[in-house]
Image (cartoon, rainbow, N blue to C red):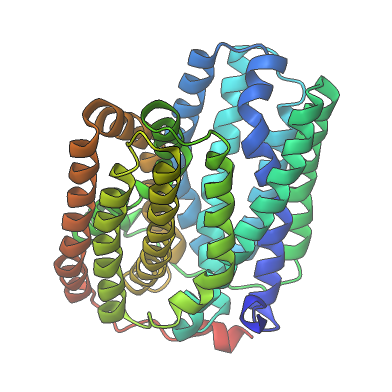
Length: 409
């Protein structure tokens, strides 16, 4: 159990900042769809369109904001973006038409994407190179713990079902980002990297890194699988009870909270990251096979297959997370971590935006064949990441960055 607590210093402060806003985010995630449709009054189709546009804008803007974090200093940039995110969430409290909703959603998605990139640059500046994957594992564990607590709070609001309850959730989420900004101010300042004017957004010209990001996006299909694919599969194609959707979510978040740090220990460089990603791909094939077996007439057999597949899924998720974190940092040039992390993070947006469409077409449209196609695609991408990572590493024109974190601390 002591592994759940990050080391004292910047890592623990970063985790505290992560915890502060993830509680609010957890409540937001479980209530936002009903809030926007029932309180704001948007049609589900318009809400979906607005969020898709917003995250597309945010993913593009996140790269530039990551570059600003590199140039101006990641701590100050992260603080400003945390405050901006809180302001965007607070604006949802008064939005009552589509145009204002779209503007607020674009601001929210842009600030969130930039904040993620700035945080990664801040971590790179405060944590020694060899400790970064472990630090990210602690952050992921903290994130899941906060989301679970926030989801429980959101559940209370859903049970109440009143406008006041929904407004309280959004107010808590906005306040959580204010608290996050205050916690980030406790960290040491990290100086910006001199960039001059010669290369702007160099990541857009870095083809090897772009290939790594693209392949990683395929592996990120596991995210909408848990939130969209599995719930629809359970309700449409199996005899399992609907409450199992919630139970599997709790299983996933709890397992990540308890075991992500331990899983990440074995990943300490590009070779170990590649091995972790290959193992993740192999586990995803098994996951898909086992989950496909849940389409049976027996509720108990369906529950057993879904539970077993979910255990394999979370194991694949933890290996993928550890491997992808290592690659994303090790392949980013010194002084451009925020910019590169902003670009790498676009994979999450693409997976969340296009993933539901891909998964519903595969799983609900093709059944078992769809599961096998999904598993095979993820496995191929996981094995292709090895050559792509070696290609990218071979194009780096500088040695691995020195642990500026140790100097800053």
